[in-house]
Image (tube, rainbow, N blue to C red; front, side):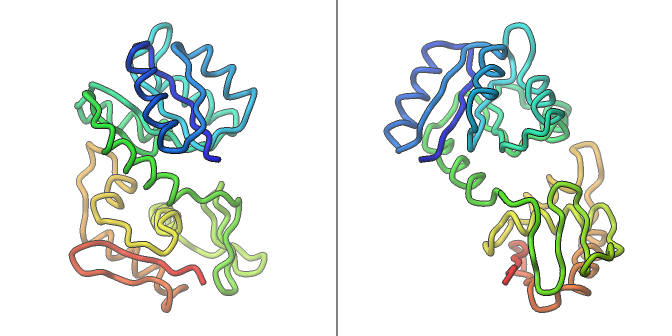
Length: 217
């Protein structure tokens, strides 16, 4: 069963999330403050974190930053009333996987949870033909030799692998490759795709106007 840790300091909303997600078949652990959530994260392994951003003592970004520095790569969706680009950027740079705005539509939250869990890559390495991609370090190897790949091309490869054979929408790719304050370059994206196609010509597919899909087998 998929286990989710919910961190939300509004007790009523916390209970609402717990009731709704348990009805959908998830196993829930809930915390009202970041210290309790941190303790729970050490006690058991979770498949997903749902963290409120504005919290007592420290915010959700700070907590996830601590977890990431400790080697915890559990995917995280932030729940927030913030809608500014600076917060969006901080959340993704901290290691967040998605955001949902308050007031939360529970059906939308469920769809986002399903999407994040679906694309999550659990293994530390992925084998693609004769190549091996190191998930943690974002490095590509042919046998034991490192392959020349730009940082953004490596990130693009990771994003496509997270899609597990499904089409990854263009907007999602752009959000992962560029921060909110950066100018998104369509030309640069095509260059990164071309870099990957040099190694995986049969695996990467362009769904025109929608996004890209990668078959890893």
